[in-house]
Image (tube, rainbow, N blue to C red; front, side, top):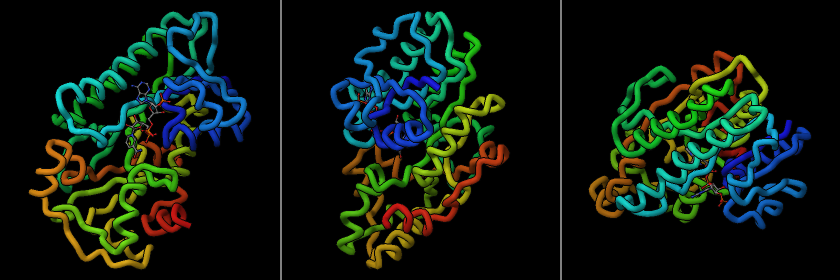
Length: 298
Ligand SMILES: NC(=O)c1ccc[n+]([C@@H]2O[C@H](COP(=O)([O-])OP(=O)(O)OC[C@H]3O[C@@H](n4cnc5c(N)ncnc54)[C@H](OP(=O)(O)O)[C@@H]3O)[C@@H](O)[C@H]2O)c1
């Protein structure tokens, strides 16, 4: 397949590009730093500097849309919230406008979303039919998905990737957690009862490959392992795998003071189940957290 990716230079995108190249697909990556594409995504991967450069006569078989400014890195001022929205929603709207103009449409658009779609929902088990939350991340995901689903108007199959916490040795959540945990300073966050719905990067990539190929699959998919854990269990398991103690807990009030509204990302969780992927027979190689962490950290 000839595939266009946005966000192809990111944590998920780089792993996906590796797998897609291994399968022999031709890749073009939209990036604000096109000169870095070959280095990050592999030799032979083409770079697209601007979506305006996607001419109507240029055909792609598939589009994978993962671009988005990092959500945890900076305080959620109104200006930052707009940047987070523009980098996902406005970009997706532009992408769909390009699809609308394409002389031959791609068969499929896989577009990013996140388990933040569901908002903070305590112990409730969530599947793809569960309704959205109302906080900022939830509204971001709702609007991001709505922008992508517009591509269906042009006969494109659309899959929405409700992405969980990615476990990878290449960055993301673990890169933030490992330094304190390695020093024996790992800490449960708040009361530790909030759920963490995670997935090993290899399982994520395998599921994306399946969604690209399987014309029967469309709509929203929870991209998580079938066994989410509480933050307390995640903390215990990571500490055990690293053979370090994690005796501390970071009080919720302190996290709220330091992180402001973003504290919801770590103090509230979602207990998400990948019902539709499992129903499609796309099972995880690493359903259990301990084995997933051991594989990532090996
Ligand atoms: N990693 C996770 O645990 C996780 C969990 C849930 C959801 N997600 C979502 O999944 C997507 C990919 O995640 P990731 O971890 O791979 O992200 P990442 O490593 O932060 O990479 C983000 C990518 O988005 C592109 N990007 C950022 N801001 C942009 C902008 N203003 N305009 C155009 N492109 C922009 C970057 O491309 P250039 O810098 O090359 O332009 C980069 O390739 C993100 O949207 C993220 O919110 C990730």
